[in-house]
Length: 186
Image (cartoon, rainbow, N blue to C red; front, side, top):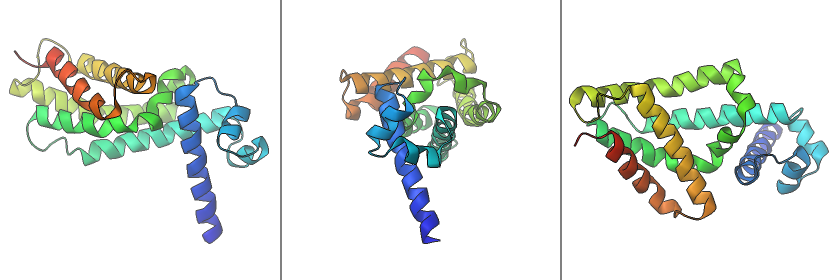
């Protein structure tokens, strides 16, 4: 049991190192990822058979992290604007765990990830529709369009943090202000 826990912890550390490096250098090789994680490439291969296997594991973890953030945001509680603000405040700090998804188009075609993407979008779409029904969000835009814009804005916020043009502590506030200024009722 202790050996399993140690292996799980090491795998978790490897995923963290890989997502950090891939956020900075999307085309990083397995050798570069192993070096960044301070292990040999052979050790990395004990955990992941190849880059595709590593990327799939990273994507599955990213979607699980996003699902957890959505659940903790309690989207059904309070007004839609308040719930959306809580969601964005929960998602912005996850940049180093999910940012790499933007840079790997091969993941979008994996059936398990398509299902995970749908599972994370459904509650957000429901929140947007609730906000539209209550008059908090514009009804002349589709909920799908608003969610797409939120996705792109999240990636832009993560990029701005990585570039150093936005302070990590300001990113959520800036994103909420920008998004609601575009979809909020005037």
